Length: 391
Image (cartoon, rainbow, N blue to C red; front, side, top):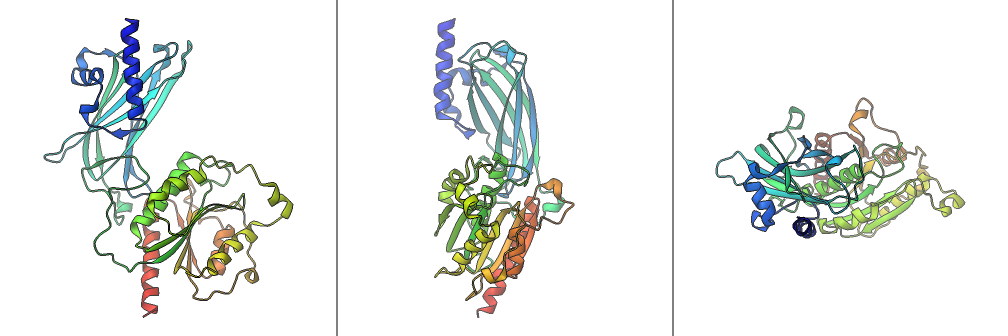
């Protein structure tokens, strides 16, 4: 029995190397033991678990994100070498639709005698429509936990003007890129020379560490902009006001380099400040003015300059004299991301928004993906106005 269990664990762990995250996989690639359990659920032993379905919601990449959280009593396990495979079979209710299988794998740590719960989650992206989900957790002891639910995906009344980028009745892996998205053959506006300053910071100014959810909002927002706004050239500068540091810079940025942006902000510790910053006593306003002046002095100056991200925790005012005189005068936007629970306010008058005001630009506070879509509309309309001015 122990030999058979060891073989099964090895098969599951080998499968884990093929599917390290929740990915779409053809059923033909399933290990035989897993395929047998899915085909004959009545034969499997029961594993106790609780599963909560996460309702679909529009994210900042303008895709609907849904998923689940599973909680498993760890007293069902003991010692090392345990493994899970989690399968989500999702079938659109549209005619002639075929199921899509998403797989997540996990290896459990050495488990002592305990009454604690083990938790794990998974997510996926959906187009508008109605779906049936058949979910299964399969472990190394050939036990299964199963649950079924239905998902209805539709825009809310406040999201009606949002242009979603996934076709109806489609399922995708949860990814920051939108590689399945293709731009329309003809855009509503002409291409824009664009510079994006991405402020890598927590959405809440009280935090000193960039959380995964904060990074997801920033990266998906950046991804959406590049998908939505036509631009032959995007200059991207990733910076942090606390550390007064440029984390990443690329003159001709494309979505293919999004992983590099993620790496540049990964593990950003805002509680650590460079000694040189303390020594030179440069203010956040001085740092911001330097970024802007470098942009204004660029030989290939952009038409639109966008500051994207949360408010700075500073409110220093940039002196007008510290800003270089502008030649062709790009138009400045600030899309200030704020947590939804702060919606009663009007945003935070930080150093960035005050500086945008001095440059006669516009700050737009963004709480939800719907707000973000409206902000992009304003940027596109401004680009159209500038196009008419140049005729």
